Image 1 (spheres, helix red, strand yellow):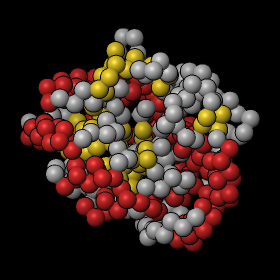
Image 2 (cartoon, rainbow, N blue to C red; image 1 turned 180 degrees about the vertical axis):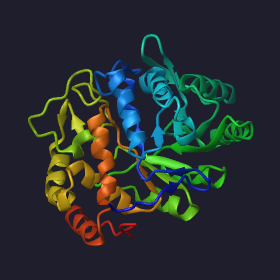
Image 3 (cartoon, helix red, strand yellow; image 1 turned 120 degrees about the horizontal axis):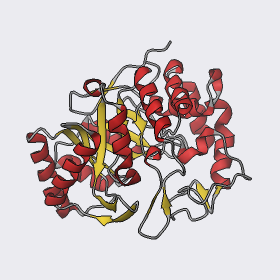
Image 4 (cartoon, one colour; image 1 turned 135 degrees about the vertical axis):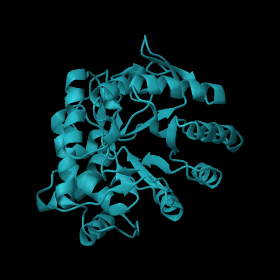
Length: 339
């Protein structure tokens, strides 16, 4: 078995497995402010708990959730699943969105210091823990002048022991840079997958010794290889016919042909050495930088097992990475080979 070293959450001393698990899907569907479903359809809480505990048994210790996922439900399920494991687990959650937990609807946003402290307390209660390892701002765009009171509030929570470290979930490199330069943040969470690189943010993380926590690592399921031009997603799925404008990999309930074409052009490389397409996609991220920590989503124990098996294969090698770059276009990177 290829040994992939633990990774560290930036300048903190928090050590995590090189692969984490993203807990959006296990929260279930909620309705956004435009009346559209946000989530991945029907969930089974018992299966979710089995899947989380399976991940722990396989050596995964990093779980990423948010208070808005399932309007608090994801945090509650994660909290139940890790009872008895808490000392061995690193929990990342997020704040900034407001929601109606009873009716499963997003209401708006709130990033005032008073609300952040209330949201933190609520997350602690749902998770059944005394502290949050990594607390992340969950609002994509925040003007620079509004970031300073947020940073001060996060510093207070850290000093009080309610959180160990903090970061931001955003794909905006300029604002990320300002946040990094004016805070003690340890991570930036951002989109990253073999079809969609984010060089500026990865460079920022490498330069400032930050963790690059990676979401959308499987392109919202496109990189599983399960979908074709004829696939149709259900209406209660975020990728269904009412998919939001920002969702690029699926349009009107079907996989986008352009992205499917790109995937088809590199699938043989991803599936080299006996990997599944999922494992190839995750292996690409592990090779992209030693700061990356992919957090694939899951709904079942079987999905967790497939994700974790990636670590047996290790990262893609330099030749495989270069071939993918040649096919997809000029993306001249320096890679991290098998550790």
